[in-house]
Length: 68
Length: 248
Image (cartoon, rainbow over all chains, first blue to last red):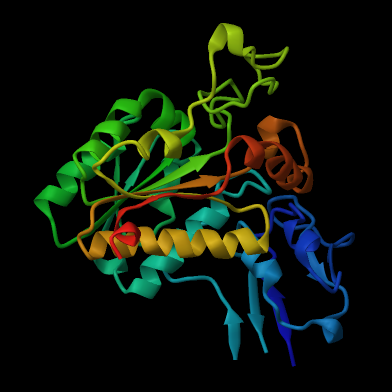
């Protein structure tokens, strides 16, 4: 099963991963806040992930690891 | 099975770039290339002046910090003294196309066997968004508040087109990193530029169109769109010179 993990402390909440996700399952967290003061990106529905790694390819801060 | 993970070509340091700045993507592409070619241990990178000045903290290879614009000159020395090492420069448009134009043109003319990664975001980022030589006509910046007036300050410098007239240059390509497709193409171009050097083919330069959301005054998402709509029309993507392709 596809698994996406975010290194949330590295995330700057730019949301570029959100724009390229073909399944629209990435969102900036409304509850979490990291040490830098940003709302990190999180997966809203892991079941729908197809492990295309578009989010990781677009991420400028190498926050994302994709496994399947 | 791991589909994607952070490359070992990058250190664990967190990038200082603004949120959504595509410098991070370009750093990663270069680092992935070094790792894939297995040359991280024998690579000398030359950091420029500008936002990318701290790139020596991020690449997992030896780095030298050059004076403003002088990265290709330092790279020339490093490569000639250590011909077996891989030498690349990582420069922005304020560094390569403004103060460092002479070094860029002459290292290309001499056909130095180095790789130049040129990040073009059409603005001076680190100093706060002033007009650069690569700023588009009518683009609003801190020092062109009514838009760049080409009758007063002249036209943008098109580096790939300019260098394509120079016999010493081996490989010139312009790519962008505003979507996944273009990022994949950019990776291939960067890889080719490094392979050329390893095979001793000469001067390779990859111009990467990049975003500067902070100084363009746009959100990261809108900046990608702005790059697509404005920069790519003025700076068309593609291969401008490939000496060894012609000979086939």
